[in-house]
Amino acid sequence: MNIPNRITLSRIFLIPIFIVLLSIPFDWGNWNIGDNDLPVSHFAAALLFIVASATDWVDGFYARKYNLVTNLGKFLDPLADKLLVASALILLVEMGSAPAWIVILIISREFAVTGLRLVAAGEGIVLAASQMGKLKTVLQIVAISALLLHDFPFSYIGIPFGLITLYLALIITVVSGYEYFKKNWHVMRDSK
Image (tube, rainbow, N blue to C red; front, side, top):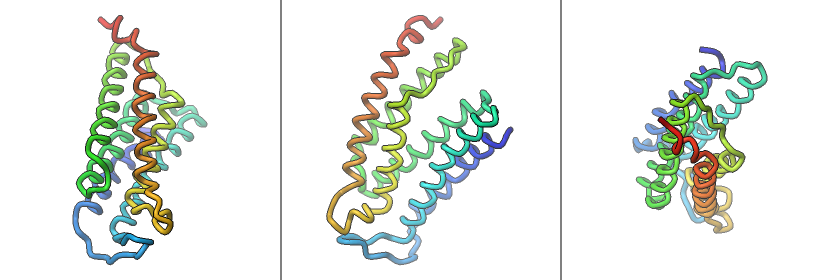
């Protein structure tokens, strides 16, 4: 249980706090932002989401720099990312901020890729994330953050930045999933 793995675990432990901030109607007031009101609890949840998302970069950087990459970390890191993103997307659907069909496609892709990685792991093969997969993660985090912030600061000029970014994230998510399976289909084909 090295420092990068502890950082990853902290990301997992932040998820219930994030869920509570969005699920329980705290009445901390609202901020007027353009045509919208931003509940302070949504701002707090967005801040927590951004901090939790940043730990993904921190633990990966630290693990690579100090040669602390472990099998536990290879398992926990993508799991933590998927739990955080899926939780946020599902809550955004509940809030009426994200279309359910987009969230279903994004989460389905994540399950499919995780399944492929499990099959590969059973064969002793580690499948690394692609650059397109990393771009997908960044776009998802930006879209979720913008939606949690009710498009602040873009709400002042009436641009639905969060929704636009979510559609871009969907496109990259589907394309990267297709590329991931195309590149690694041999794992499924040759598995015992």
